[in-house]
Image 1 (cartoon, rainbow, N blue to C red):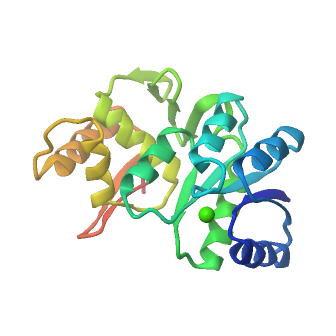
Image 2: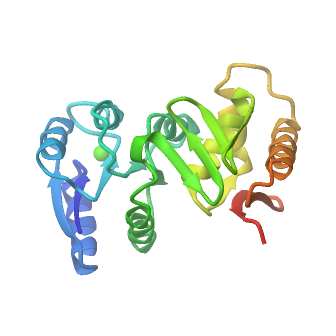
Length: 224
Ligand code: CA
């Protein structure tokens, strides 16, 4: 289980590296974007853990480099930026997950394991879960083999859900991604969007449904 850790802070690099090694991973490290890209081209890593604040370039350029080369390696982004923009930008550019610093080491390891368990999810840009298939390149969704039309906003939300697996998306985070469209966002915009998504999923007999975790956010889960 060979992974690449891209982190310029030497202390953090050592701590993370040690924790993964102790959990049965082989860890290569890179301190800057240039080294990371060289390593990624040379070695078929099972996952990349990517810090965004790197000395030579923004870590996001490494992510663009990976996806630009059509590499399917899952990428978990570490961000110390508090704005949600970095997170949404990261997810849009093909990050599979993210974690904000400071984070819990056990959580980082657990989330990395989740990424390894889903080797097919980034392949050819198609996210697949139960009977729902999301082609992230063509922006098309098939449910039960039938193409279902979704609005741009609905597609963005559904993609967020599918990339997140069965983990929660905070309501504030969904709101942020609506703002990314540059439109006015009404106070109940997220509720309206979730309502429409739910109805479309249900009408198309998707085996997935959106659960509301009151006051916290939403989770896409297998239909009971
Ligand atoms: Ca850094």
